[in-house]
Length: 168
Image (cartoon, rainbow, N blue to C red; front, side, top):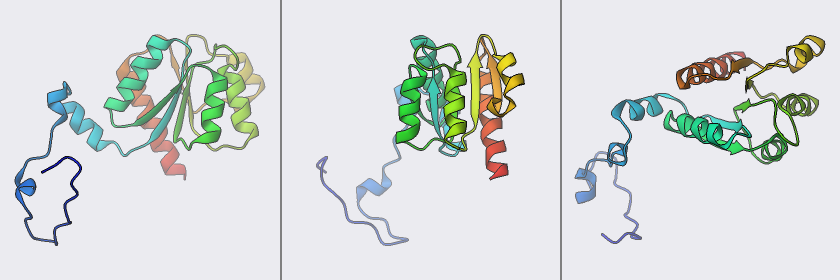
């Protein structure tokens, strides 16, 4: 069969052509483990925006979330994140706080002022607790203190998404 050839749909219950007997391709051959495949199949597709000015952390977090079955976009600062939030729909925002242009707290202020109902995880080395005490409406849904592990992040993401789903 040629690569660009489109096959007609098979009627229900019938086997059509040799392609139907070919087992589905596997991600395992591309270096992903079977447990990664199962994990990604068990997560419903959620769209996450990760905001981090440290490019290595941004890449690691983005890759880990994608391998866990999430659709992920990354932004290197709060200004780029704000543009993405206004252009796309996301189910979760994970943001650092200390970043150039727009901080995580300023991003939360913009998010709340725009009345965007989006759960937020603040992943940072120093939480701005004084700001959250003065302005409790800016409090994120969850926090992660750097350094955190990949499993801590995944647990927090699942928890926040589950809670957001249960309240909607």
